[in-house]
Image (tube, rainbow, N blue to C red):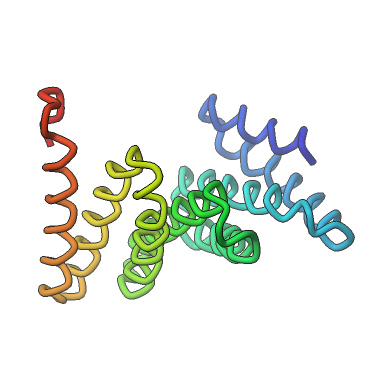
Length: 178
């Protein structure tokens, strides 16, 4: 399973998305079988599903990307609630899930997933200030999703949070232009 997972990653790095999907599907299949008797590999199975979702997104197969990423999200949620690595993985998987839903023009689900991403990143922020830039991006995306629903009050709140974080990041950093 690990070899297929790595093979999928390497195909992805070369832009060979079809082969990346094929190899990662094999990794997911093997890890699913292993997971039935060994729940300790939940994190590995979640990682393979997250990668599979990403590879599908590179092929603009948004529905498949949602399905694979949703499995990753469900697996991450079963893992430790206090483990920063798991929380970060949850945040990233929810962010991607929101993006994939937006590609399907499913704005309610995009909001739901991106709001979850924000919630997980906020948990990490006090202990890891480097997450602020990613959190600002999540707030920006959340505001954009709300705007598609014409929920202007929530869009404004999310964009203000993004701007506030960006301003804090920009102070003392002349290289930041956004």
